Length: 109
Image (cartoon, rainbow, N blue to C red; front, side, top):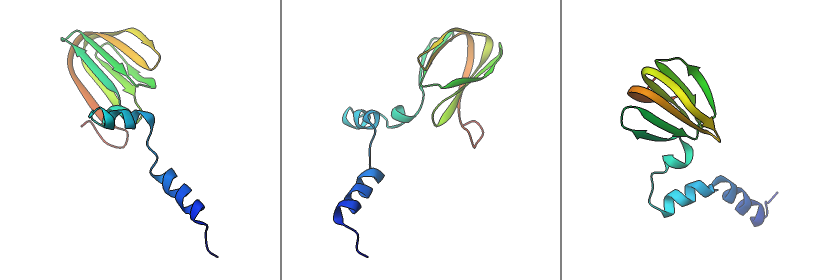
């Protein structure tokens, strides 16, 4: 049985569909991982903003782990605390030693 060309083109369009965020990144010459990952903004050693996080995986005064769409963001330091969390963005203050990115099926990158 032959398939209609319309069915084939719909399947092709579905496989190659780009999200709005991916199109924006491509058009603005931004890294494509901004569309799928967390956006991390570091201000000195004392403040970090993470946008694109889904939930808090771990919260202690020396380590915070945030779940993202494709990878997790790990903030390591001293006296870490949340100053805000909402609309998929987290604000963390404290003495930040390092920030790690980890895929869920791997260790830290």
